[in-house]
Length: 364
Image (cartoon, rainbow, N blue to C red; front, top):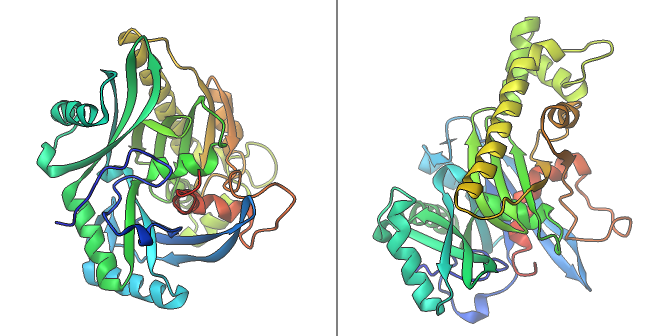
């Protein structure tokens, strides 16, 4: 087992590896999902950054399913090709929420060592792992009445070891692993925003939900609905191919008026998504209230991921939820608007949000 330690500063990325200080340098962010690997390098330029190396590498179906690697050899082959094409060495890697756990604790103000031990003792109350099977990290959210409100993130040791081996075999060195929700928060939440927000990452086959305060993750969930759900609904209703339906989704989406509207075709998966998000709102408010603390109002919903800009989606969600919905800005902490034109357009940049958050982990 590699020597893992829990870093107390989410700026650097959690679950970091114990490596010599000379290796603690800015690294490329690498986000791996079931269907693609996004890679991005941010190059420091005065107070901001420019985009260096980047890549979106397609992963064929069946290699990764639900965040679990099913074909080790095929994945290593893809990683080797990425290393060769981009000449990569040090990387920071995100781990899907399917493999992670997040929860909150309220603990007395004690030393860092005592705090670590107190969390460790309570771990099994919140996750189905023993302390020996898990690696965890925490961030202090705030101080209330002499106590600390803490956000805890947990990953199974086995997942970290497995991921490390894949990258080691490909010739890359992962210097930190981090849950995907944390990386998204670092990318799309402005530096000085300390409010509670809900981040919705809409991928091809699933949607990740994270409630964060500032950039500290307090709740995560995974919904079994994504962009492919909309495409399949259109294809079935209109009796057309997947490719034809995908084009319609991209061009028309959830618009409920005008020529070519497929609103009725995708209403069912749209409603599932909206209703599940509504349940998360309700859970958040009632869960916090039962603990006797003041409910932290969710300020807004921020959409990201490859399907965030589907026409009409933002408006549909806004109409059914009791807070504002906006499309995230992946570059909000990277450079000032209007002063740099990145090589990745806005729509595609939303799919790079996790990788950008990883690349920012030395800075934010």
